[in-house]
Length: 150
Image (tube, rainbow, N blue to C red; front, side, top):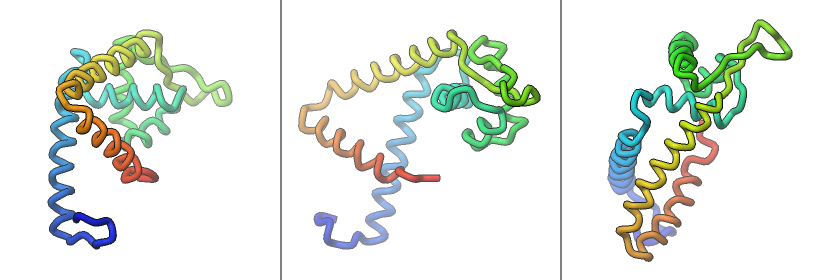
């Protein structure tokens, strides 16, 4: 695959896909290990979605998380017990609950992001400038690969 004009062979694509999958999984595992104690990956994912999507209904959050509403309800209840999210009545329809981050939830997300970014920055510091440039280009490529992914 030395030239972009050459059609890659299926076995080359599968080998690249396998290597990429494995390294991304290892990186994700290392980042998860730096999460707050007592916060599960599912809880952190839900918090991230609430942070990104703003006040959101439980149904919309379940869809965003790709989990069944009963499972999400358990997660949100745990987050609520920890004081990280709050449920409020939808101003347009009082029968519908909206979930939003509390100030404690915002602080947890900031600490979590800061801790993980510091870990990655420490690891990136061990690379030379050329390797960091390659990773910067790869970041853009990976974003294009995932663009418009359902």
